[in-house]
Length: 431
Image (cartoon, rainbow, N blue to C red; front, top):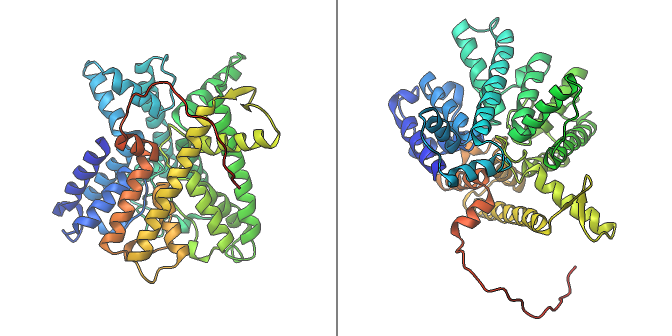
């Protein structure tokens, strides 16, 4: 509900004359932009840098900062600062959102979240400013640096540059800064906390116990980046990357597979990519970031659990084990449910777009819908061309993708208490 309120408030603010240079924006476009901001998606129907005034751009920046961390998290911080008590229900919701163990100190959790966020975004802004203070006036360089640092860490994908980062594809400093911000924002705060403990543990020569969650997230993130980077580079080497310098080929390939998981920036024209690589990007958008992060998608841990389950069955194991730990069957079922619901929502949205947006190819529609659900923001350029109905479909898809399909299911399900009984077991043929 907090996301809905934030979206509506953002819509009203963007509708006001001071938010746009023309003084006017349609309700659907304002709603779309606000939803894209709060859901940290980055899909746009109007160019952020040229259509909106500095005030409008600040509103959008606040929306994706709120959306990245969660409105409830900000509300909780305000209550803590004011000395108010936090309800048990709100504590549980926030702890679940950030994959935080319930026995740990709640105030410490909130403080750590904001410390990591502000520190990383501040360092990112300084890094951008080092490059941009030579190109822009100091006030403009500061604003651009802060805007893009927050956008990158929150995996929002909004840019004040009309070509996103195409003109910086060979710039080592900008690429490395963006990549680090995106990856850190997509890991999740529990993982960041564990990585911080690991670092200081090494410095102090102290052994640190790493959680199973962190091990899985770091492993999945590493393999997704490495294998997708190699695949992208090999397929596009003499194709879309053909005229690029060696450094541009490497950075463009690495950047696109990282940003495809949730960020939505781009350093090359996506319409030039082969169908195989487009399918790769769609797969990465579907997987998304990690639980408790600023990104979307079905999450890396969900796919990791499913892969582990399949591996266990192939090896004829009685239990699902990972890093010398046994995963409960309920967790495996939850992972399959998340993926199943996500696929259902994506295909339903795609079918509606096929029916209401004639003339658009299957490649374009699927790419856009997967991008919306994964709260990524990458586009093949069809978003501004969508009708009002098409935009509303993507608005709903972005919202569901941000809150998660399970949250939506639980919201509409009726909880009933049944007695403990089971029917007679019988099998059916499958496969």
